[in-house]
Length: 505
Image 1 (cartoon, helix red, strand yellow):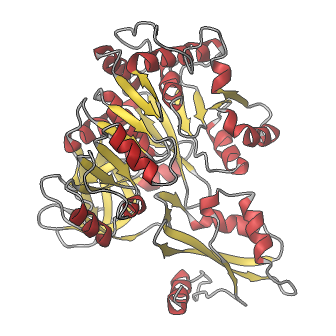
Image 2 (image 1 turned 45 degrees about the horizontal axis):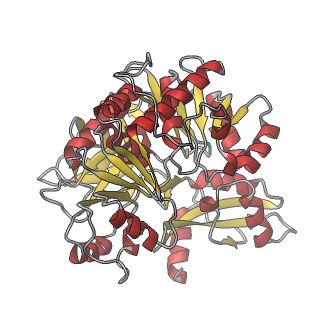
């Protein structure tokens, strides 16, 4: 089975069942499948060949779903692209993956024009253009939607590539994690079991749909079990989200830890229809969990994962949660703690968290050396350091990778540093993270300038805003005569962190 077939099977169970709620609008399974088959056929007419990678550069909207499944229906591979990225960042992804066709929408028109100048051979196809025919089933009255076939016409199998998800790289360039239909279906089935997800569940989608967490838990899981999603149209003010949860009787809410802090506001009533909240993307602070548990009658469970694992690896069991723990492995997934040589470590011993199972990626696109570094004897090396207790619960205590988590999105300092080095006058640069109550972490930068030049912080930050996504922009830039280094010349980021801590920032 492939993902398009899984969606088709769910659709055939009840064509009239609501699949997506979007503000005052709603779309049935029959409507979404009609849209999916339409997009798939249009892509084939446009010359999309089996196995071709199609970029999906859309903000959260109902059309994301038929675009996603439509590419699979056309036997293509999807590359979901972060819509916060700037044209230079997107251009690298498109070039690296060999993407010649990108599905986007009118809201991205200005950015697409800049990309056309960088990549003249790439076609940017607005979803409105795909559906420009008078027979267009998207965005019009779908009361007479065509019947859904019993199964998808896609020829893809579980072993075929389904998605290339680009994650920030330690080398300063993103890497494309290759996930098959089988990888994602395996993860969906495991999540279904641990979350006890059923067709009556309605999942709230408040995070970006391009994110691997939302892709699996917010889109694929509900559609594979025949559930519905409440796609939040307006995030601000936050009370809009709660109003939609109540109006649509949503049952499961996945989000990042910082979002659950907003639920502590007195204006949010404790009696709302949710049965479960899921925290992922970043560590869940104990204080948030404590306050949440005291206020609401339903649980907030912490999970852990990474794009390379489709992405979910562990969840705190609904039956017994442990604060501060990322929980236990989900069904069909093995997790161990290993030392640098690959030896298994026992309970209480600290080492690298390693993952094995049908959810683990096939490797990084066009990067065999990076793949070899990340997968050892079938085990995915997560780069996270931790231990397990006597009951098999796992804990993350440190990061082996030099990585920040801003609003649950990976940010590697190296990528920001490379851009800073492009600014005239910069001699050396280093980026570290500082805690932030609202976004988890924020990057801050330290630079030393060439002799005879001084730092213009505003000019540097403006330069970076033109090159990097907004969430990667440093909170501030500090100039030092020289950055601290060890005997071998390596910049000592521990010293910079200590400097920030002593300053109370």
